[in-house]
Amino acid sequence: MSDKKIGVVGAGTMGQGIAQVVAVSGFQVHLYDVSEEQLGRAKANIDKGLGKLVAKEKISESDKKAALERLSSTTTLNTLSDCTVIIEAAPEQPELKEKLFRDLSQLSSTAILASNTSSLSLTRLAAVCEQPERVVGMHFFNPVPVLKLVEVIRAEQTSDATVAEIESLAKALGKTAVPVGDAPGFAVNRLLVPMINEAAFIVQEGTAAPEAVDEAMKLGAAYPMGPLALGDLIGLDVCLAIMEVLQEGFGDPKYRPCPLLKRMVAAGYLGRKSGRGFYHYD
Image (cartoon, rainbow, N blue to C red; front, side, top):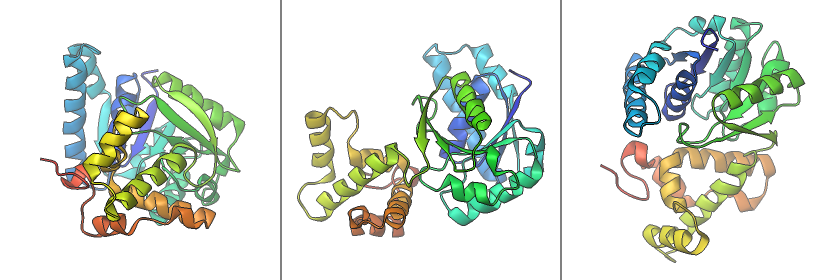
């Protein structure tokens, strides 16, 4: 397993988590980002994340060292040309993802190209590639080292062999692969993000404060985390982008983004990553 190379495109929160899990699972991993500064932050966060696993005795100090040795970073996309699988975890922007997939498909004629998109059409991404049958969705959930689910999304063009390979990889990473069709929001986010959006409407209308909404859902619906705290964890910009994809994809007014959510994103109140969302963070 250790001689196989996995590329991860994007060193943000999701890319960091994916790269950490891949390295811990015994794969060589190339982490790509356009920013050296972001790559530096990513490597520091991965080191910190591995340290927490050591402290919890889930891995040994030698396991941590070996995982870090399997991790390399680069600002040159061509470095990923010898990867078996390339997992894209770039920002949720259709034009950016399409350009990346177009470039990646020209970079390698054999690598499986997987997207961690949380809501965008895999069929649309596959359509810009020279060999669309090797494009597939591999949707991880945050925090990646903790949550076991991977939604495996089949585009119209995806081959059976590609799906089988990604399901096998998910298992090797200690994840559970759940097959989902290529529809806006797939399964989890189609259910989850409208709930977060509705919770924002409750706050906007003055029905309840964020703390009250979250406490009610924890105590009354057995949620481990309230929807607004979860929205802050996901990123309110990501939640808004998913709502916009759902609204456009289904054309149904029930997916209308909450105006409060839109204003918060416009103000830069994105949740944990910005230090402020529905809650304040140090």
